[in-house]
Length: 107
Image (cartoon, rainbow, N blue to C red; front, side):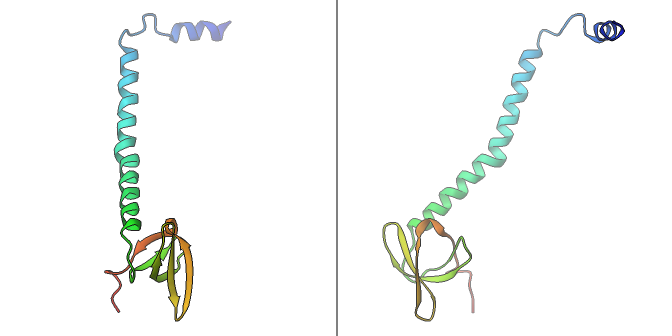
């Protein structure tokens, strides 16, 4: 009984009228921040990766998602044949290619 009396005394007698709007504004602000810092950059990165995969050409130096470095030898609709070492060639899915090292690799 004593706990109920304390809770009743601690509860506000007249709840604020604008409380609902404040909650919606805060939710919208949280969504906006999540969009600007998480969703938008990820979409830009996916678009850039898709452009890279569509612009592949023979002789490009690439790396796969598994960390295999190679040079593009042949391109088909969904797969790419990469030359890994000497005469070793691997056929991989285009979606497994994640980076282009044609310009950055200097030896």
